[in-house]
Length: 127
Image (cartoon, rainbow, N blue to C red; front, side, top):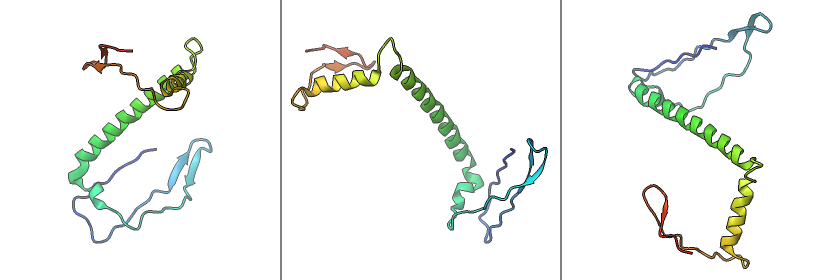
């Protein structure tokens, strides 16, 4: 479905919507009318649609798209690690580590691992 956007140069005194409710249904191979209810908020912040904010909005959409891609990669990686039979369940490993650090009494037994360098590698690990 083709989507178009209209950007406002100056906010109008009256705002009107024109909705295309006719679409071609490929399954039925005929034109159909969209009977869904059209609704909108009582307050519309037109600054979101001002032409002067077009570039900012495009940058935001681009960043949002990248974040969605990164999220999908993280989800896939999580699923790989959490269901890897050779490695065991990563969640169980983290829970075991948490229990060891807390100790039998439930209190945290903090272990000094030293300082990490800029690459995130630990230096001067102490037990």
